[in-house]
Structures are given as structure tokens and as C-alpha cells.
Length: 267
Image (cartoon, rainbow, N blue to C red; front, side, top):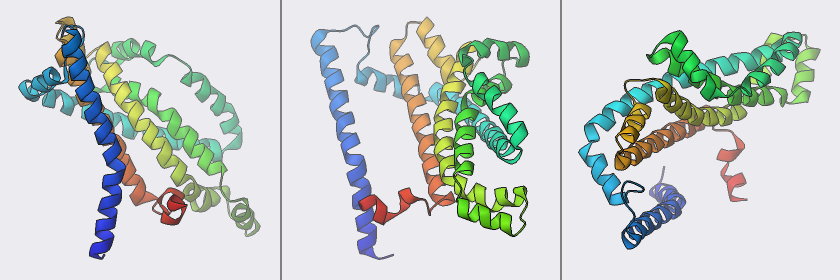
């Protein structure tokens, strides 16, 4: 790769991030100024400088809580991804079972997930299992829906060709439909990983002795608003890290996807 290409890519990356960084700096400055001008109590809304001081002062507890929550997110997301992909493949492969199963999946998705959190605590205790269960029921649906949409969007000409040479439905699924479904699956996984962050925090709200959700809840009971905002900021950063990790994985798994085609992106 030439130096010119490297410089061009760095320039494109900086131009993509620069507007967001500028907007963030302006927002923080306006927030700080508004709090000081109108003399808003830190109990109601802390200044960014107070949140930053809390981040530095409580770095140790925040880091420990982040590790706990990150493990919950990662394990729950992986379970949700496996279950979501498996359900989509079952629905696509076994038509009769799929017609029976799909409405039940949609019906289950309408159940308020917050209401399930105390039930999972009752069933599984206060360890990792209830958080993983809650993440699963929150995050599997976009994976299933995206994977299923991709499986059903496979090229009909290729499907007809495979059938004409006597290929089984399983062979068609593995050789044609799954490769076609990968771009949409990756989109669903990116949605699911953000839902996994929400699921982990809701699970910790319902019952936990560690994690960022527990830290937010405990700080709110102590009326420590800067700590609440500091933990919320860390949760947001964790979510962004997981999302862009999925973006990186998407580039590795489906580099041929239209979104990565420079000709299409510049059009």
C-alpha cells in the first residue's frame, strides 16, 4: 500500500470523525456554561467538569464494574446471536415448523422485557445467568429477523439452478442462502449488540451486587448525581466499543458487501 493511499484513508477517517468531535466539544462547552450561568445545583444536573472529576476519582470502582458488565454483555450477545441464527435457519429450512414458530416468536417479542427481569432473578438467582437470559430475550429477535430476511432474499436464479441439479434444501441453505444472508445478518448483529447493553443494565437494575447498572442504582440512592452520570457515560462508551467491534467484524466477514464498495460509496 502506497503512502498516498494511506494518507488518503487517514484523511477520510478524520473527515468522518471530525464533525462528531466538534459537535461533542460544543455540546460539552454549552452544558458547562449553562450550568454555571444559571447556577443549577449539581444534585439536579452536574457539570461535565464534575463528571470528569468523578471519573478520575472513582476510576477503580468504575473499571471493576465495567469488567462485570462487559462480560455479561459479551456472553449474552453470543448466546442471543447463536439462538437467533438457529431460529432463522430452522424457520427457513423447515417450512411447516417455521409457519408455526414465527408467530410465536413475534408474540414473545411483544412481552415487556422489564417485567421478565424479576422472574429471571427468581429462577436463576443473582449471578450471570439472569442477565444472560434477559439479554437473550431482548437481543435475539433482530438477529432472527435479519437472518431470515437475508435467507429469503437469495437469488432466485441460483436457487432454481440448485434445484434443477437435485440439490437438497439443506445444501441450498448452506451454499446459497446463508452467504446471501450474511450482510443482513451483520446488520442485525449490530442492533443486537446495542440491545445487549440495555439488557445487561436492566438485569443489574433488577438484582445485582456488581456492574455498572448496580453502580448507577446505588449512586442514585445516595443522591450522587455526578457518579450516576459518570457510570452512564461509561455504559455509553462500552456500547460504542461493542458496536464498532461489530463494524470491524462486518468488514472482515463480508468485505464484498455493497457498503464497502468504494465505487458505490462515492456515487
